[in-house]
Image (cartoon, rainbow, N blue to C red; front, side, top):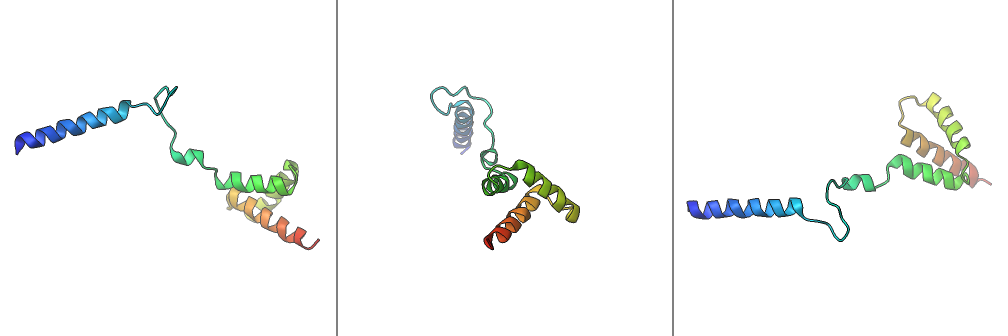
Length: 96
């Protein structure tokens, strides 16, 4: 029983070493890989991109709207403010 346990521990240690030293593919230099979350866009980036599309890239108008909304909702996050601005913009321009 003890011999089997020792063999299992040695095998797991070997697998651990292999996993730590393996390369992802050709040209990979190893080292730190960022977590998957970094690859995803944040809510703020998504809402900003949508607003830039709606306003045809008018970043100044978006920033002025964020400033005005921040006065009304000082505790809201930037992503929440951008979402409010997006919804308001869509509602206002749906009437045209």
